[in-house]
Amino acid sequence: MNLKKIQSLIIMFLVSFTLVVCGNDSLTSAPVATDYSKSEYWLSLPAAADKEVDVFYLYPTAWHKVDANEPNICEIDNPSMLIGAKAAFARQATAFKTVGNIYAPYYRQADAAYCLSLPLTEQDKMIGGIPTLDAVAAFDYYIKHYSKGRPFILAGHSQGSNVLIYLLSEYMKENPQVYDRMIAAYVIGYSVTEDYLAKNSHLKFAEGPDDTGVIISYNTEAPTVVGNNPVVLPGALVINPITWSREETLAMTSEGLGSFLPDPVTRAFSRVPQYADARINKTKGVLICSTADEDALYKLSGAFGRGIYHSFDYPFYYFNIRENAANRVDSFLNKQQVSYLIDSTVFTTLQKTVLPDSIPSDAAKLLPYEISKYKENGYGTWTYGPGLDPIKRLDLMPAAYTNTSATNTANLLRFFNIWGQASQLHKKKIKGVYLKITK
Image 1 (cartoon, rainbow, N blue to C red):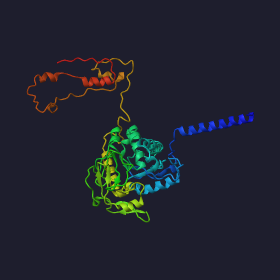
Image 2: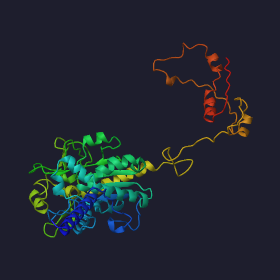
Image 3: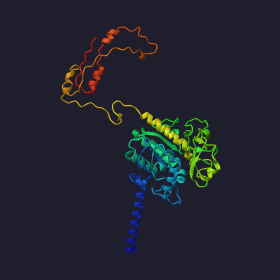
Image 4: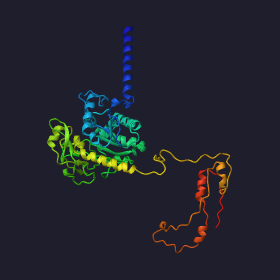
């Protein structure tokens, strides 16, 4: 082999090695969240926040791979996702438009068919990766730049709800002051399980129509289905979106406020009165609707098995969701309307505490009765107050107790205990408190 051939092989090897190393770096480097300071990455960004509360909405899976060679996570500007996200917003998020200012980010999504084909632990890794990274970044940006301290509702569906599962368990745990402002989380179209709540004790599931700070979830099916519903997990919790009860009692269509359904031909959505009933099946962990036209709906949306009404979780109960959101908002705001005597801006110890001034190191030692010298020696201003009349507190004693056997009560009253005052002086770090107790 001549020298030129050897040099060529060395160059080819070095180029190949460089490409491999660069490729590995790109694959293993940590993903970067989308920059939500840019308005183009928001599906809905209100020009004026004219309502008292906000809604933060995450749309369901809005795209799918058309080529097996495509990445399993789409880009933030994927044209198919942008179109699908707008369509989902129109049939779901608009249920909240009379209730709050709706903020909805675009976020990079996983291909649902691929993701759902994985074992559950791998699904969690995928959804808990880039989709959650984007959604949490968007929510954090909303909190810091748009919310202005307003209470908010979280709302999602399908993959959007799956992502909310992570936002609730992680972000809300790390930011309890933000969680305190959450009116409710509509985590619809994905399972919230007993095991999930057991692992996240700061969260709670809704029990009625107007409790706040709670999670609302259900997955809708026909009485019988074909195939497996991939978004229903063991131990899934359900609330009835007509009665807002956890019981298995049937809610008739007459109790509903109407659905928001597509025309079979034009696919345009409009109000359809008294269409869907609702009954919880606790064993299956699903919401059963027995009045829907199963054949027609399967033709409109057959992504899942026949009888799985995943695409209609919101449309079936659209107007009940709207009324319930307004109800929970009223309940939340009424709880906040407390009259404070000191200041309209109220802080808890999470924000600030009251501390005594530091005492000079050369401060003189004082006796408890030398109150006139407290201020000049850096101990603050103190004065003598009036004495307190004795009070009999028999309510603190057991029910059968009587004070007929008590003796020497006069001596007890003469016992002069200045422990309360001494404890206050201790907080001020007074040096040398001398007590003399007499009968």
